[in-house]
Amino acid sequence: MGVLPAYLALLRGQARAQASYRTSFVVDLVGNVGATVFDVFTVLVLFQVTRNLGGFDRAEAMVMVGISSAAFATADLTVGSIERVRQYVRTGLLDAVLVRPLGALPQLLLMDLPLRKAARSLFGIGVLVTALALADVSWTPGRVALAVLAPLAGVVFFGSIFVATATLSFWWIDSGEVGAAFTYGGRDFTTYPMTVYSGWFRAVFAYGLGFGFVAYYPALALLGRADPLGLPAWVGWTAPGVALLAAAGAATAWRVGVRHYRSTGS
Image 1 (cartoon, rainbow, N blue to C red):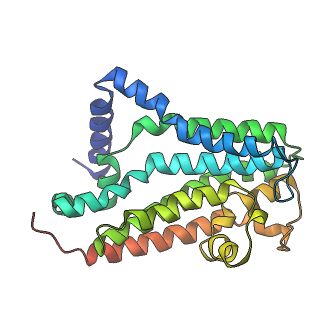
Image 2: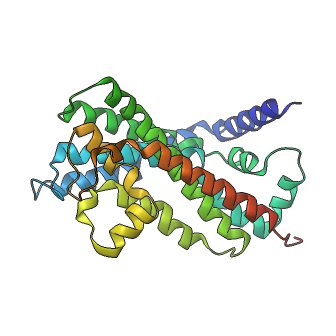
């Protein structure tokens, strides 16, 4: 069996296993939308008491919310299960994965692909499409391309954060809360306009870790707005490049982590 058929067989097996109990699967599918719905509602509730947030009105802020929600929910669906690697290290399951003639990372992702989270991804995409339709966007071919590329770049970026933080488990098994600070903390950071943050916190998360290029700067480019923080307009088009840099860093961290992995012997 070739590599691709083997991965497809793993995916089909996961789909059959998760859909075996159909009622439970449907309940999980619907219930998983909740977290993303609350993220969106939180922003809408804020606009019940103020007309602008960090200098942006509701329609403009919802474009950022849409990009962030679509990107994070899709990354959580496709890559988020890598958070379980610390359990695989502790139980010794990772040993069985590493001896197979397949890539360790794709195997781990397909072994526990949370298909129940698909509805969250669809909801996030729906929020983005609705926000773009309601916002005052002067559409050009370039902005149409950016509207497609920005959430895809966000998926790559958040997926890279999931993988990079999961590699901590190779040295520190109970590193889950530290990883969550960057994955779920990053999601919360990108949900709001970057102008609501200040000082070292904004500098570290937005520019040092790159979260400012997930939703905020692409949204400025789509809306045709100048950056209140002073960066030039072309920065809004750099999201795919930042995502590729993040993916390269995560791939390097993963390879280093696997090479330094020491079996627990369990």
